[in-house]
Amino acid sequence: MVAAPLQAMAWPFIAGPEEAPRQAIGLTWQDEGVDPPVEVSINGAPQALTWAGAPGEPLRAAAFVPLHNAERTVRLALDADGAMVEVACTLTPPRRWELFLVNHSHVDIGYTEYPDILADAHGDYVAQALDLMSATDDRPEAERYRWTCEATGPSNASWRGTPRAPTNSSAGCATAAWRSPRSTST
Image (cartoon, rainbow, N blue to C red; front, side):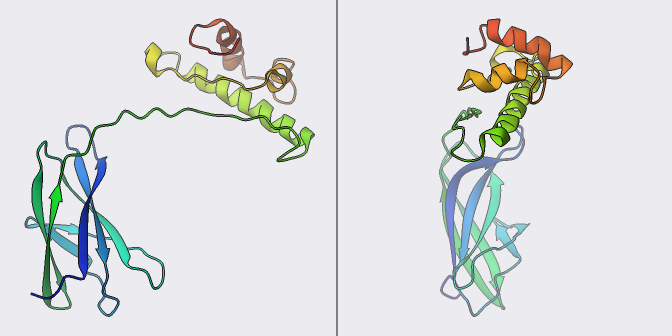
């Protein structure tokens, strides 16, 4: 057994399908004189690793183990140029989060680009938002796409058909968007 050039830390990250979730373990390899192993054994089960890092910095990789509902310790073992390296890592089940992704737009005409170029871009944003709203109409209310336009100028230009008119599918949605209780814009 040699001093461990390997460090392992449980990450509060869950991956994989709902029926087989896995918890992430962050690995750090600190021995510049020895190439990191391409495989680690976690509680006896081999797992391939892909290491990455900037020159002069420790290399990092992620390994995944089945998620458990209680704290537990897993043993990681690897062969580093013929020497067996083992470390233990205590895993605490991460908190389950519900993540909401919110589309955001900001209108600042003339600050980031010329006004005529931004007008085209904002027209596209409005049309894309309306297309996304139409694409989620068949989903339950809580899963439908929502969007609030920060300024009426880009929306009004889209309704007039400049610079990009909404598609046929989004045109009906546009009318509904201004009247729908799911829209926060009036």
